[in-house]
Amino acid sequence: MDGSIACLVGAPRLAWPSVNLSLTISSLSTVFIQIPVRAFMEGQPYNPTGDDVAMAFTTGWTDPGSGDWHTASWTTGELGETYLAQLLVGPGAGGLALGVGTYSIWLKVTDNPEVPVMQPGQLTIT
Image (cartoon, rainbow, N blue to C red; front, side, top):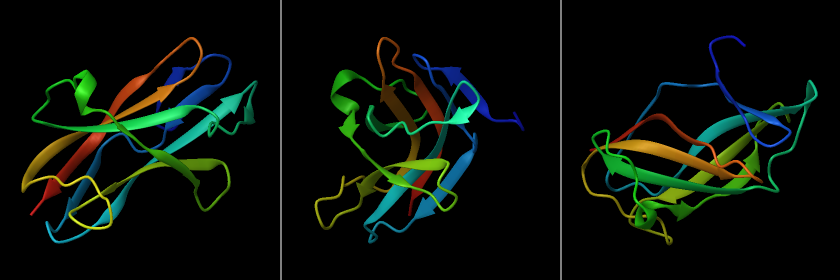
């Protein structure tokens, strides 16, 4: 698949189209950090929004610990076959407040029985 990361998740296959996300936001911003996810079952588009999704942000390349995960949500992308895992980050509106710095973004999708954990990119807060 066109350079995507793909992994097997239960019966469907999930693919992250962007494997090197590099996002920069102001420390004053409160925005959704969104990770595109495409899922297929038997070659057909599949809706993964029934699976729990979580995101973590760690400094450097440190693996996230159990307390680092934050419940994320799903929304749909422009084409209908891409779903967006998202988490509100920033100091306002109930966002996850992160200090100035660079963070590894982690995404975890809980399926049954598999739980893939991917590191699709970095977030820099200036």
